[in-house]
Length: 402
Image (cartoon, rainbow, N blue to C red; front, side, top):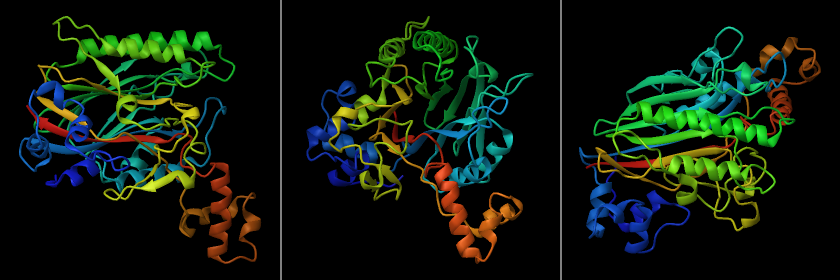
């Protein structure tokens, strides 16, 4: 953790697109500060950002990887091994301490992604006779323990061919712990009745909140992340499901009286645009920027396009409000949408395609550089220019021991 001594440094860390320009606005960016301290000052804020045994920084990414082989040949995504390799490289070369993924259904893709950078990992409900795994996969540079819950309510085809559920990991930060719950809710098919989809999703959310009640340690801070397949931004879609989901998370009643209240982090720490399930919309190259601290390219979510606010926002991070029982308080930086554009490939990645009739003509009368370029462009088109059909969502965490 690097000490930040100036208001400018702290403001930039909290929100590099719209940094605070005064103490009051900087305090507001520290979401929980005014709720736990009656008299806050610049010194209080600096103390939170100082290198100290009682302070810690980490970062979190949730990402739907689209590494799905399909069910009975239906719904298979293209170029799984190539994409898994580059998803792994992008994640491993980034600054994340904790990464929660979904749609990583097979062990071979889990191994490709993990490689050597992450010492700890956890796998959601695994495959069983007639069903593939949940696809939930969490990676961490920080020690963790894991538990799993398989949804009783699975819905119809093709979701009922997967053991969807909840992956519960407790992440030990050394000064306190996070109870992280990741999930991937029901969608069905394009022909699924909207009311049926909503009913099943709400039953799964009820299972999730009941599971949180059963497993959460009151000393820990709860974070819920997942592809909820719930779009709050369109009146013709299941916006009502979003309001019900928000209500379920806002007050999770537990037996010891320490109720859990979760907030949609995008609503308090996001930008104007929030869509995540169509990378080619709302995050065009002209609307991207590079973070000066991490070097990562993000969507510019301060662009004035309010008409598309929340359009296609399926991927969520819900965070718990501070409770007296917590060992730690977590301040969250700006939440961002991250594109994972398809990279240029190397010749050794594609030379095995020499024997594929589809690509054989590309190997004729071309040198390795030309061959690589032609095949890269072909694969990029099939993948619509991205490593997944979703954007990632990430956030930095400033953790302070109470």
